[in-house]
Image (cartoon, rainbow, N blue to C red; front, side):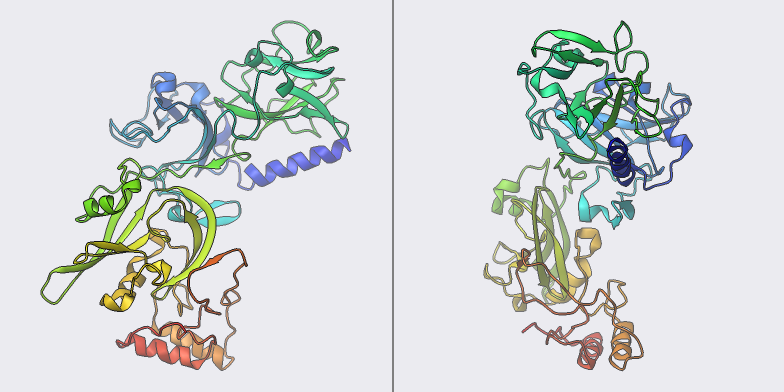
Length: 496
């Protein structure tokens, strides 16, 4: 059983952090070269205990305890003393994370990711999937993202409640070396581990204590002075790190069987820990990049949606302004978000583009895309299929504009109907591929069929296939014909 628990732990860790090849340069703390956090929490000075590590050399993830008054940047240093010129993220004086606009509104441990390429995370691997930044979160200056957070009481009930029963307890600087109920260590299938994750700050040290009455410490593990965990060697890498603590009362832990997160061996054969702060109990926190501040009709939007008017969180952009025959603006394709993740899923079709993505609470538009009628001074949500009075026929070139501008770069998680070769446009190649499939010269793609779960909200009739360009529920030669007609100027077929 003991070995089985160990193997389970190792497998979980492999899935979380070891899927990528480990670069010695990114994990070796014996050399000074590397990326460091500098900020209000360390007087903007490079310090070893604020160095961040990577397991793939591309994305650096780290938990960091922050208050609303804290701000930070990432810098690279070749000597571990001064930042290298030109390798400060983000560049500039007044744009540290949480400095120019108050993003962090409550104290807690936040989990960040950092990309030195400053590519906004486009195309990076996470949990076996390839994400574009706009599909998951928005990156601050394309280099830093806050992926999640938990305050002291988010996941587990932290507290100062005294211990009430005999047993093992974690005692240390975080609880005045006294047994507390929250810090109890229990036997799980023949293996002792902490009941809840333990938050460790820089400078925290601890031991395991046994108490016969839940109040008085009877024995400490290990006994003696100067040998508490994190005291003789620095083992905790990040401030506010959440650790699951494993305990071996007989000091018989086998390093070949049990993983120790510190990579420095089992502490006196008694204590082993692993970090869970970057993977467990996180509440999504989607932070906007530096918001778009422009837009001819931004004030009209803020007046129409006062709940989204806070410029610190509002990201508003006018993607296209359509003009009438006299040159005057008549309607505008806009993109807007306040980045409040809802957790729901939905499927809909706007123009000829499918949307299958997460919902956002409080956003004015379901898919982030809206239409502003300049003459009516009114905004519409085309994803609601006319339930708010919107009629696409009243807006010239609407379908083509939406297909051209509601791209993956603007948070579209779907694809165009009829786009067989997945190049995000309708072309003669798509018509040719449909023809080949129809005469069985080629096979339909495995992902061509649209299968949606029952819990997904449906805001539009559901096409059966992505190749079903004319919306009749079938994929056949008629779809190729309609594509060819569309390419010479015909309108999109309307779904039945």
